[in-house]
Image (cartoon, rainbow, N blue to C red; front, side, top):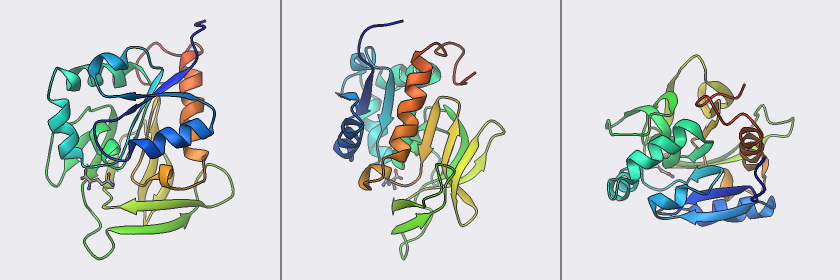
Length: 205
Ligand code: GLN
């Protein structure tokens, strides 16, 4: 087993990466901000924050970052929130755009319209009995999930928190709430992957 401390990277090209870093530090985990493709090398898992997915893509199209990130998320744990969930999805709608294809969902960008494009809700999840605060900001909507995708929470019959093996995605922003349960789940996934389930693609055995 490796003796280097478990480290989670936060993609820091754009968007609200610092709130994720603070949430992970509250859980006592070592974090690094990832701004260059080679910084993916030493980390055990990666958070892809919210922001604007089309702007992320513009940054990622430089220096082979997109290809390197695609390789990373095909073998290591990743957690995408909002724009991050859009980047991880297999299929992006409104409009269609390239993605990492690591999570078998179809996701529609900016799906809630102008009136309710940002909102805060308390909702039930499978992460315990207490409802979870969910902050939605120009949120996308998950419109299809593949068979291997587990739905952990829903809003109006659409999944808002999903997991497929080593990949976790939320269409809301858990980093903007004080409740750490979603980050804790990701940390547990990263620990589990590092302790022996790291092979075999995106599946926790
Ligand atoms: N609307 C953004 C997009 O399409 C996502 C918004 C967010 O990350 N809060 O990429």
